Image (spheres, rainbow, N blue to C red):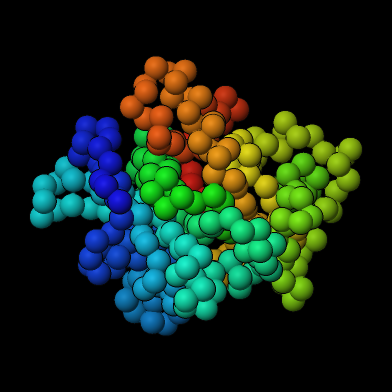
Length: 288
């Protein structure tokens, strides 16, 4: 995957190329997930101050690199983990399979890519940097002919009742068709349709959604059935799936509208042009 020039050409996005860069991405994940959002690390993670699991060795790691300090002081400020079907099947499963039955996705025949472990340092949670991550994903999708993206998106907290309104909204308005729908594993399944559709105020709820989930929905993402409590990460997860042709159509129109033809093959952070987002929301990032 070719490095993508952006901004002042001092902050770039590319795949991690060395073990040291993967280690640095895991260090970043630890800072965000465990130190900022108070996830519970294993003893080994706490000792190393690094977030890692069995999938890291086989995945591609998309990284946003701040190069303003020069070649010897580059800093990884954002990351996404990318796991394709061939690699996942070779090594046993996707990460999402620990929470959801994703057989409907896998049996669809589509080339698929799992997105996960997304995070950005607080001071870099700006629109351009978030767009940069999605530009990198778009480049990867085009290079590898990916037809569907999926993964676990998170709400903070582990009390489903506190999330009854947004979970019910997702269920009633964005549920994937039955033949494509991931379903939470029986032992982890949490009912989402806790409130009747007619008792919900969609406009109000949309404002309260985590920006990343809100962005996914804007470009056509669909939701699996059932939420899952992740005690380690102190989150409530939902399964997101997205046909990549929807991304292509959305951002092709966006960049043509802005007259920037050079970016037609790229994409931006899904929450762009969010007229309902507040300034404080733009500074947040929900991990998936």
